[in-house]
Length: 216
Image (tube, rainbow, N blue to C red):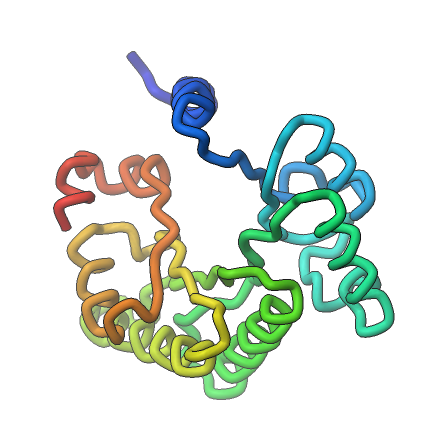
């Protein structure tokens, strides 16, 4: 059977939803899937359809929520209160920050953005912030590329240390092979960060089995 992404998601999500309800797990959704909804609509629909958490990846037409009035200093307290009143947890903030940049100014801009998201996560009591490893910057030197990603993640982890926020590395772009991910994560202080494990995104490119990925 030809397993495309839509069929995969429909099959997996169907089983996951059933399993989640049986085990009492909480369902969450990403704002990436509802770009036309306002903050009020997101929270209202989360309540309506019994979702208990949201991952914020943009709001409306603005993918960078640091630029959104909803999370400005003037509105932040009210936006947070509205989420709390809805019983909806903000489980993750998703910036576009990546760790593969080699140019000093671009790399610094990405790290600065990520740090501002960590600060916002603290304000919103959100436990996680996602970061992209993304590309292998040195095409003929994978180890140097992995070291660059690892160093960036270490800097992010150091900044988040003690804040109550954990940085999650998204298995994305060139960093999808289990051994490469393992190397980067093993270079981090124990318990300092985690990964967002997208099996389809990884398997589609690597064809590694789920059992191999989990063992790694």
